[in-house]
Length: 254
Image (cartoon, rainbow, N blue to C red):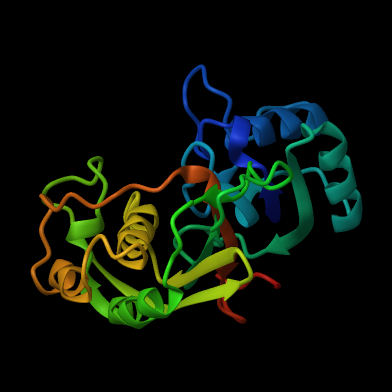
């Protein structure tokens, strides 16, 4: 039977979510917990790749196992074997054809900025500090240009292959301020490697008045891999939701 897990983790001490030889990753931590629980090697598959230092409140992983456990017992048992910086929020029986990456219809991320001259000790692992004042109204206005189908080549990381397609559909983007906290929320069908952090870096440059709104628009009007977009630090980024169909083999309860 196939089981899907909704996970959360503090990405600070992980070398990303995906399995890597000789590195501590979220997937390797989950594999270790599954091995301890079921006394056999089990390979979980992750829905979304997160880089070193990036966090998640709703990552999804799936695996196959023949041993039956009710889902509450599964959740509690796995959490007893997982390290302190990973937790299973819920476990679900899913269709045998469910695949967490392929069946995801959209992904949501939030980038959080502490916009003050004081770095906050209690949130420094999950919030990026920008000392210069940001004009969130200008940032929000230009961010709307990112919505819809666009070629995001200007925001692609160097690991994206030169001939790889770079068109994505940005469903929504929102820039908000609450006191010294500026949050940028993204929802899309999928993202390129480093795309969000480079979009945020460019919006931050705009909010500092280092570039103009026209400069920002030109990155979409004339997409190019040679664009020198700023890459923001990973620790301000969090995967907050992965959405699935309500019915069919790709269904997963919220």
